[in-house]
Length: 241
Picture 1 (cartoon, rainbow, N blue to C red):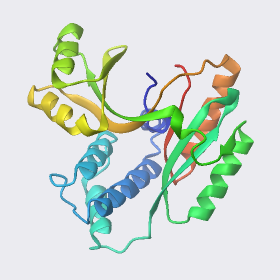
Picture 2 (picture 1 turned 90 degrees about the vertical axis):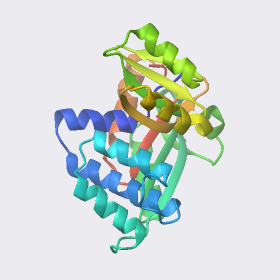
Picture 3 (picture 1 turned 180 degrees about the vertical axis):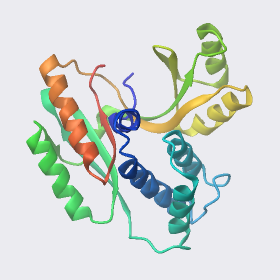
């Protein structure tokens, strides 16, 4: 199975390397605000699963508590904020890789133009609706580290909790779930005192494409350029890692 959103990987790297925290916190602030609105205006993570997941991701990026609370209040209407809309684009990148680009914007026309320009400048192009999405499945991904338990023990716990698939990446285990089982499996692992590094619903490629080293470098430049755009939150591809 393909790995996580490229944008999340880029954001984690930035936190470690150049601390572009303002841009990252702004993106998560928008995600939190939209999650509150999608949850019927509920700012309570205990009653809003989507909000709970986003807050956990934001905390993993060391987003300050006051920033999180401000974003929640914008979603509930306690604080004034811009009108935000979720957007999703499909396209192709270097080597013909399939792309799904997700974001949140206060200006859909501007963001569409920005994404088109970035793709065109980096060996990619936009695709029509449905041209790419069929190549992906929505899956839950829960990442845990092998610290106190052996790899075999962690795998067994994941399978007992209902995991659909497993994938090791050095000392971390990615547990893949069906979307409808995501929260149940996450809770089961937490109840077994398993420390969760990250948990999110991502788009996973059904089949992966092998790229040359040159094409991989072009793709990385494309992902970086897309991630620099304030509206872009997630970039999914079918690159074989």
